[in-house]
Image (tube, rainbow, N blue to C red; front, side, top):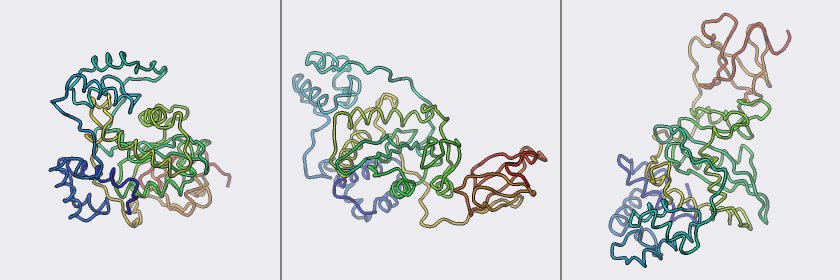
Length: 374
């Protein structure tokens, strides 16, 4: 995968962070990041000797310095708050490795008039968390906003377990082909998840028929990924990415205007590095997402192999938006036209049958209630 010059440094840092995690397959990571093993090991060696300084030309403020005086530490708190105005006492304290207590940070912020009024209506209770990275990804668009060159539709992908942001892509539209192109880049770098949860809107769902799959969903299912849909009118079922969107809006989008998609993407890339590598998360016990993320063991295939159904399955071909079974006709997602589906008895019933596409349950049909007449 080619590297863009605008994000080379952040990708170097991400490669090193993933490669230094226990049990990482460094040569496979080199392949996914599009670099030679020699380059990858060179970066790791430089990082081991020089830290982040070994990966970049420009200097960075050190995270720790035991010789700092109290006044210098206070200045560091003020500077960090000015850079990240949404961070509170506990986040700043955690980012500074506990060298200053959260209560002291809060006192410093109060003295310098840097405490903002609390935002209302933002729930802070913890949500259910999947056991391991890549068990579940959440995907959605963060609305859209205008630039001088047209609308920007930010596409976001978030790992449920670690809150690691896999992508923030500045898209010109919300078409399925656009999303597929962006997801291929993510899959090539991080591998495949076990499941992706989305809402019922296009391009992955149908607002009129919740749970109906589209051509994009079909492609994901063919990759072996399970697709689940949020309950209609219940965005909290995709709660982590909804919370992520609020943070993105507060820390990147509010009060800013972008001339182009390229300028918006640059802002997204810069903030994504902070979010994944520097921003402590209360729900993660003040770890950063990179501390808990691991790349997926499931590779993105270059070609899709034909799916093989079971020997007892009754197979049917979809025509337009219907299929025929036992001389009766039933409706099905129109995106499945031309595909083969499987029909299996539901709980050993003689009249109820489950309809599958690959591993994905599409619907249950009743022979006594066909969707179309003879």
